[in-house]
Image (cartoon, rainbow, N blue to C red; front, side):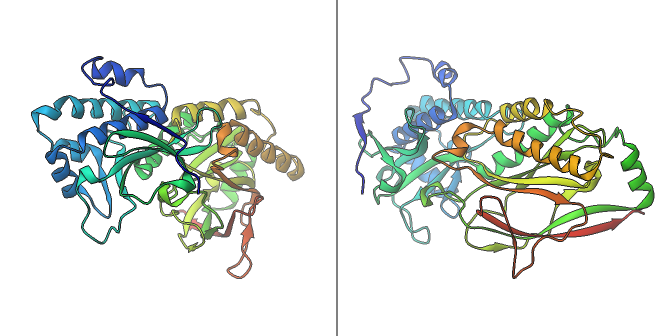
Length: 389
């Protein structure tokens, strides 16, 4: 087992009195830096009995909202630290492009103890967070022991000690992020605008010929690997469905999958993965990604818009199917190019791609599910029609 990579004494040099807390929060440049500073401050606050009481009161199944914990701390000596933590959380929300979409985002999760038994006192916990090595980009754990000493570990070398993991509430962040992305995409040709559609001749014919709303349901799905080590908790997966819109331009829609949190088990959501009203052709791609707690959703939406924007007016929806299939595949390739580079190295937050899913098609069975291009995911898709009233 690998041992400590780096150790250094925190010292009191980082005392908040030296620099105003709000300025320190503004100086944080990345979400990883924000979480490290949050973990450092939680370690400092752990000695306050008020923090211990508030933490234990709000822990549910080993997890608590940091904002809820801080709301119950009124110790005069801890006022500056509590204010600092609140400033850092606001900065973390800003760095993820979620300002205005979330009021609270940071959780504290218990690791290394049996969550069915009483928890140790807060000052017996280490505090830590998942970060990235600035040189290699590899994920690591940055931890602070009860004496205030900083340690850095590989993910597979974390000691078996009680630890408070400071992390994003990934479910809430992903829900808000999907909303932010779809809102940003909706203002561009990369996403549908249902209030003012511009149907093509082909889509108009399809509507007239079929008085129904056509869906493709995700009947079941299985992940062979969700890429999350145990210390990182549950996975947070989202899908990007891409194709050609009714106006012939690239169409990109994000889908939240909050229930898909573990690998090596089948899920049967029956969710409407594809609504064909959003597309002017009969083919789309489905790509799965894992949200790693570092995504700036505003920046990601901008990257996707820029990438698929190069394919605007790529091909008319009424073009021959072979040309449409080629165009749809190119859109999926551009979506992958828009994703952060680290998603394809070390952390592997890109899960899988399913290319050229056809309207009305059945894909896979319970006995022989459809496998993705990377064979990291398998799923069963079925068509479904909602009759218009």
